[in-house]
Length: 235
Image (cartoon, rainbow, N blue to C red; front, side):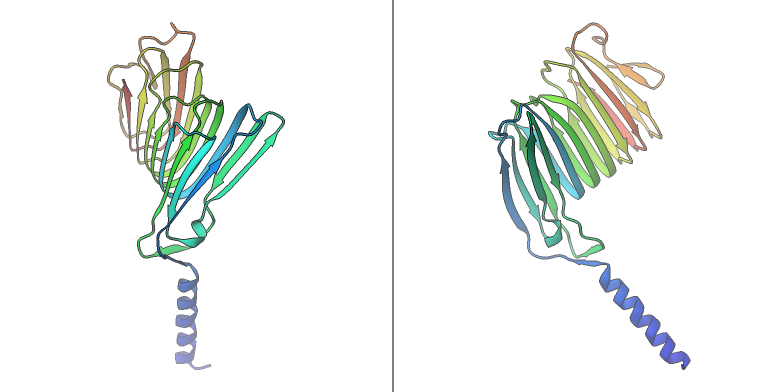
């Protein structure tokens, strides 16, 4: 085979490969989904989002009320809910689309949860921006695994029972709002660039407020991530 023909075949192969890994960006779609609690008395919720913007807060009339906006068809979220005995199992997962989007991709989840039911919340977030306003929710536990991006968590407000929080991953920057009137402990492990924790007491890699060890209810946060910076704010 002549050298020129070989070069043409190689170029064609590369072009086909490039097209194969591209994801088409289309018109922006928006859809709403709601999930009723049913007979469940507590819920385990898993949110799995590859990339985009995640907004989460309480105040829903149902177990979950969500609005999803996306312009890559295969990113359409899959919502699944089943009740086993008195336990509800809810998952919201971004549809899989391998490859790089061609054009400006948009993907945003606005989710509200019920304040009336105990929830174990797990979030697997690849890249983007997450704003979690968790005030008023009856969280039993919170586990976050995040790739790259910015993460803001508001844990301030009233808490009727203790809460365990774990954050793992490579977050670019993080802000955690903490309550003042109950005990708070934050342990920071991993390659953290900087920690701003004004108003908290520092012992090694552990930060506590003045109420820690004095209240029946407390919040225990463990951050194990390569975070560029983290702000711990008591309010």
